Length: 336
Image (cartoon, rainbow, N blue to C red; front, side, top):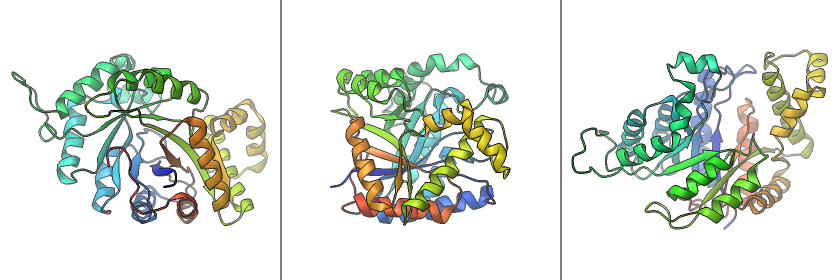
């Protein structure tokens, strides 16, 4: 079997793509990804970002599940400090009740937005300090009813939706290892601690009822096209978009002189660093790069991100990668 592959969908809008078009495109991509052999389809929680319309992963996971048959769906992830564990248990318990055996719940401790938006969500910045306790509480709410338990997630109780710890530092790696949970590293935008986190997770892992041995997912940007030159254009587009966003400039700016100045600036170099783990090329080339990345990261699975609004280009990229690496249409992934 080739490298296990899954999809991280940012539900990318902009560039003439409306939020509705982006979400309709997600459903179409998920249907095709299922047929191409991808194991799961996750949405990440972001707020107050005009070009990323995945603010409600639970709603979108249900939408994707309703439009597919086998592929696992879920969040990569829910930013738990933004919510109460009870509400998340109810949401994902409802999904698991409707689509049994197909739901994942990835959990992160960052807010996924800026400070002003955190205030608008009526959440305190220090809520992230309670992340480990909130994860354990969420586990209990999704588990069987306990004697004397007065607060229950209905639906949710007894569904035991599988949890995944997300992170980009050693904190998440240690927590996932301590709790015996799968770990997903956000190397598609935060590459620096990937190897350290992988070593910590594997070295410190403690078996649990959910997981007997460590299982690590690492995310990677993939820009595949029929020719290497076309793929380089896709990569350049994503780099420009990220650099402009980091500069608080309109993402869809068309001023080439301004864009080139941004790319030469420290912000541009930072954006390039964030996209360090990117596979760029034709199908065979990205297949080799993704395989090498999985080995480098010690990852059991690669979650593929592609923050480009052009849906046909995005679909072709996922198709080419699958053609190069997927050996069958039912890849076995943790939770599947």
